[in-house]
Image (cartoon, rainbow, N blue to C red; front, side, top):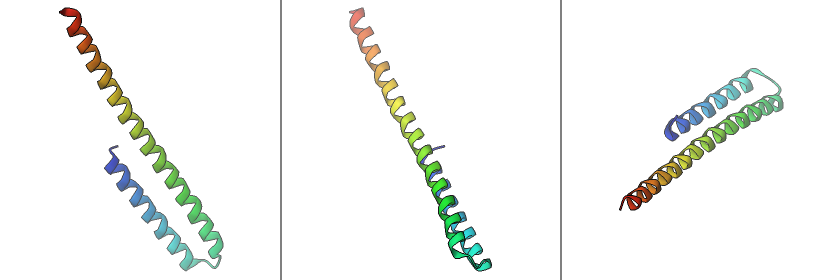
Length: 82
């Protein structure tokens, strides 16, 4: 997934979580339990988002490092040939 897709997923999941919370508040008398479930679910979404973004950034950094090494190898090869 690209960063934009991850952001879109995150926003969609947060909205679903809020919608579920609001529905639950309308149908239940235990607001504290509903709020706890909302916070737990939201924390899971946030953790998943953070994990996906960290992996994306890690892959991005690894890609830049690999390009740097590849460029460095080409330069060394060119100088060896001369």
